[in-house]
Each structure stands twice: as structure tokens, then as C-alpha cells.
Length: 109
Image (cartoon, rainbow, N blue to C red; front, side, top):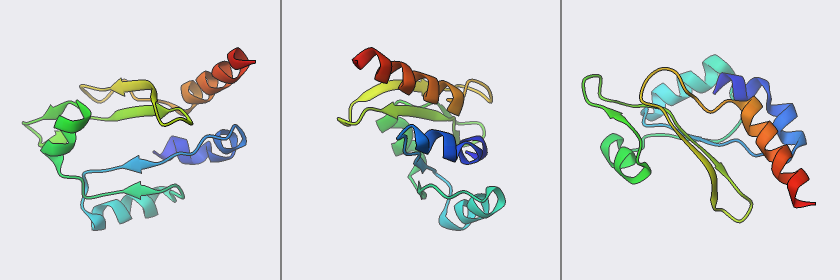
């Protein structure tokens, strides 16, 4: 999330809106927002197992966590790209999102 925050001017310039959702409780989410000076909307308090089931995300039972799941949503609200991590690597990164949006725009002309 911090990397997306640092790139906000670049992604906004391309018309991309960043939003996030978290299974963290409100207080923990507020700490994360403060720690990284996040300015984009973050929903929090998602029920862990229900979120995993509805998103198809990887739920790690041993640590009781939901691994990162990312989506690039088109303007018509359909999913262009989905990314599912099963561990600490393999996240959706702003550079890929920006490049893909630019590619889609160029291809649409």
C-alpha cells in the first residue's frame, strides 16, 4: 500500500483510483494509514474467512491471515486483472497497473 501511495500522482494522472480493503480491525487499519500516510480509501474490518471465500483469496490458517489479493477493475466495473498471492511475494505493483492501463488505453484507439 505504501508504494501505491508514493505513486499516487502518477496513477491519478492516468485516471486510476486506488482503493484498498483490509481484514484488520479499525484501530489497526488507522495505524497503517498513519504509518504510511495513506490518502486513498481503505475499508477495514472485513471478516477474514468470509472475505477469503468470496474473493477466492488464499487464507493461511496457521497465522490466521489473508494473503494479498489485488484487482484491476475496468471503468465498466468488470475485472481486468486479478492477482492472488499465496505468500509474502507476488503482489500487484503500481508500475504494472500503470503500464497495463496505458496499454489498454492505447489498444482502444
